[in-house]
Length: 193
Image (tube, rainbow, N blue to C red; front, side):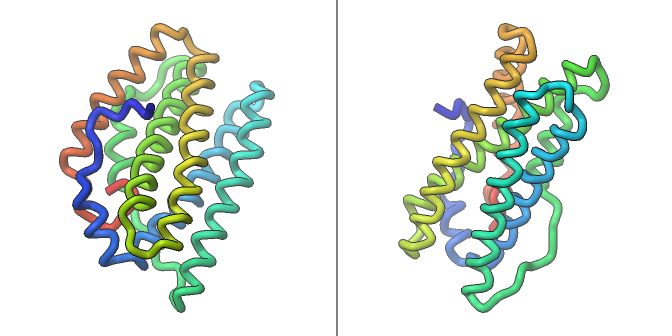
């Protein structure tokens, strides 16, 4: 369903399971960035009322997820760790050229967001199936369903606002590029890395 060209190496879960506090901190910041991205769409593209309405709801949902992850961190007797850059996102954002028309920029941002959500969904599925901590596994199963909805939301908006054939080709090209990035990732206790 997600269309990812290279699945995550299952050994990634072994790394994560030994570093739960680190993955929770990274996950918390991913949720915060997702909320910020939704707000950025509102600020940058206010002329698209349907997009604005969906991004209002999404920003609330993502901040709710941030709180849920933060609560888990606190319940473990820890505090939110320091923010760190997301190498996956940094590399991914190099794919589309800068510039272009306003609609082209919107479509590119929507496709990036769709792919980030798709990869998060795939990673959450692995965590839900493989973590020994059953409560945490169930937590990630619920979030996996949510991420799948976000992935389709962004992809559908890209297809709505751009030329469908062109958008679908860009999506496939982006998926190919992302598979190349993933060959070098999956070795750290981060959601995307």
